[in-house]
Image (tube, rainbow, N blue to C red; front, top):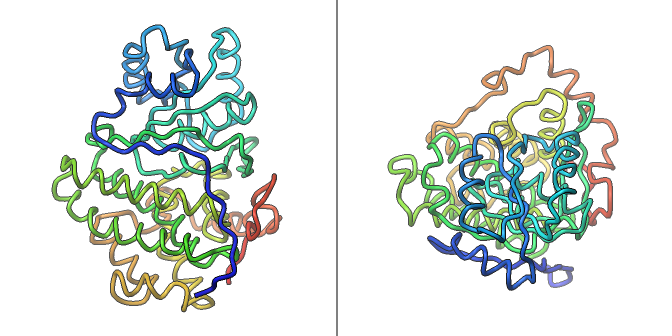
Length: 343
């Protein structure tokens, strides 16, 4: 084991437990906040409005226009509404799109953030923001981006469809996979990454059979938290660069893109980093990339970019874009190892 390493602990409060979303107002008070700007996507507007109703006078207003890949124009629209509300914090309820919008607002305003995840994105525990403008998705890292509090309530995921449950979890596992060979990896991040894989291996097959099993949903949130923590503590590389390119240029769906690419980028990188990725083969059985492919197939996940309507003609452009600015995948305050690498 390498006993010479650096590990930075993120200053985020993590709350786990069924029904604990109802403590949101209490946690706002602990943060010294009293006027929440509640965010969601259009599909989860009812959740945002319901949360605002529960918060009562502690809700300053809602914005329900969060969008995939955090478009800058959507952020600007949310900021325009925020200026009239005198809010002192952000409460995001939803998946990665809503969390991304909350981060984008916090980065620009310095407002505190509370996140109530409804998927397994993992981005709620990272100081990383990916945002899209003019067909290009860029990524930056800053302490202001990291949410102050995350409430993992498995009841918020109980109605997540099986297909999205699987895709969201595989998206999260991509963070842990790249954490295993990150240049700034350390024993703590490696332990968390492998535990995340074990956690999802334990719960995902069961959730495919019974998606309303609350204990399995809680296990999945545990894995999600581990994945996100890995993403926030070490550098990401080739897999994330490719997926950000596909999402920014071709507007491919975020979770689906990461889930599809995961077995292939693992297989590509195992050629150069087999010793580091070998534990995945031990957990799932077989070589790492093939084992993840088989696991995805058993879960019924998408397995090709063609399934999300990417054409063969798009691949050359995607490859060229992903190869540009390889050392600038994180544009501000990068941690060591945040350059794109394949070995």
